[in-house]
Image (cartoon, rainbow, N blue to C red; front, top):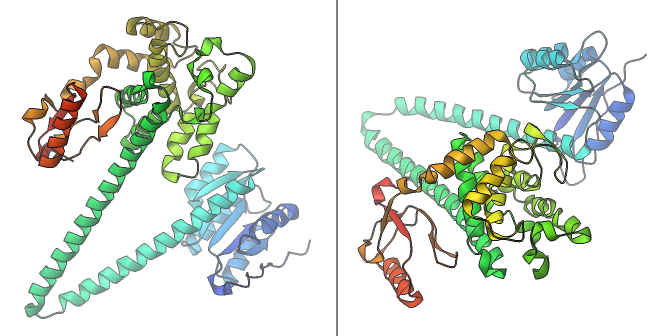
Length: 449
């Protein structure tokens, strides 16, 4: 067979050719190469093709290539050997492995020798492979920018060493200015993260306003789910994803009728039961546009799955269910059993706990059930979070250790809020008007992270 000549996609009219990322696709199957070219050309990429590893190396010698997609199984030179040479000769070129085989050893060889960025299985999903390529190129661009900045910093440091001693004061002033800017940026980022979680809590409270009897339910679920996650030693990001999923676990029920929401799960039948089982998928779809909530969205999708595989919507079982979803399912059911949302009567906490323990291994993950028992039996460790105080004992500078919540379950102030004189007066006025004492837990300002 005559080696196929590299084919380049024409650049879009609005963008100069030099600005287009260049992809090299290497596969011994022409139809695969044609498919990849049809997929990436309309997306604004310059696409080069090669039908063997040797031909791919020749293309790389003649062309500047940003990313290589190589098949694993090729005659003469397989993908692992080819990508190893690419790594050695063109280390800045991103390397992806395309394989239709479940050959773990081959994939390991490609990872170890070629240091590939990702591997993609055949048949691929067009959206997934486009996303992988886009992310890979973005990462490469960020790495190049990082190297540029590091080189710039090194050069500037060398120049600074050559300056006269009289400039030391200016250098110190500039260093202080940069430190202050960095500290300000970190503080602003921390504030954004805090406001993001606070916004989720507010949205959760708004979702519960349809049913006053359930006010505070989502926060109870979220708090229990997070405590279980912490006991299971999930990292901070995973624990937060579980917490947010707990706050939004009923998000997919927006639009359901009041009668349906008030009906216990065991009393739902036919279309209503089918509609209820769709709420996890609806919740996932609502959150998917928000990249920071995709972890929570995946948890919400699987919240009705069962450990024995008889759940919804995907019927997955055991450890195939995301751990966050296994935690959330238990936390939701624990409070729903007590509030009459699952069965016709309201169970006591100890009755709900017994039902959950009895369903270990069928409905719930036994590992999660054990963690749940530990958290519930130990009281959850709430008392270690700050000191409970009366509103009249508050002083400016104190920091809320927990969300300040009204007796109706509505959040008044978020945890980590620094109290000032005006806010303390508002809390006291609220207590006077509502005729009830608020549960306030605070810590000194110096403990705020």
